[in-house]
Length: 103
Image (cartoon, rainbow, N blue to C red; front, side):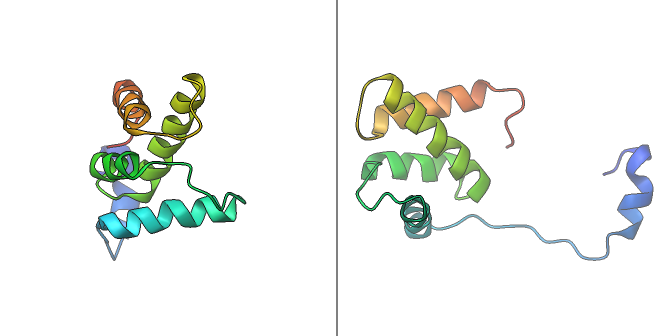
C-alpha cells in the first residue's frame, strides 16, 4: 500500500484491523467443521497433523485451508486414508517453497 501507485487507496482507508490467528482448539474445530460441511463425519486428519498445520499456519484460516488441502493431496499420493504428520510436513514443505504462498 505504501507504493506510489496505491497512495490514493492508502489515503482512503480509515480503519485497519490485524487478524489474530485461531487457537489450537479453534483450528481443530474449524477443520472438523469444514469436513462435516463436506459430508465427511469421520476423521480425515490425525491429531498430530492438525497440530502441525495449526503451528505452521499460526491459526490463520487461509493458511490452514491451504495446508490442509496440500496434506490431503500428499496423503492421497502416498496411498494413505488419513492425512498424518508426514503428510502435513510434506504440505508445509511444498507450500513454503511456493513463491506465491502468503505469509
